[in-house]
Image (cartoon, rainbow, N blue to C red; front, side):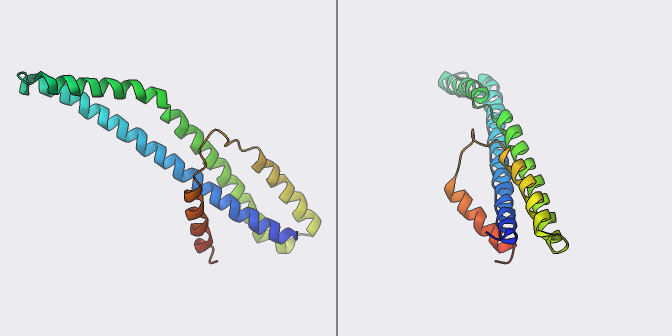
Length: 154
């Protein structure tokens, strides 16, 4: 494969990965925020229901149960830890993307040997990005690939 083509394709791949992991990070953040808001509403609803619905105990008991279940499930999901990890992965892909873009723009001024050397260094950094513990959402990847191609005028 011609080195210019390899750089171009790797740059597009890095762009797609940076966007993909940013999207996952944002989604996990939104889920975490929704759970926290829901929990706050449920717990305050329980307290409010003591006075308002003292004759209808089922309401405050149900709200208490929902709040307790949510409070138990929230730490098990470990969303905050996942958000941090996904943000780290996104940041690594952003750096790799930046290096590919610089290499792509500077390819006119470099020999093929220099391009191959720099390309290999970036590829090694890319291979060190650990993303195996997180979901692969194929539909999302296809959407983001289209987004990358449109953003690059392809």
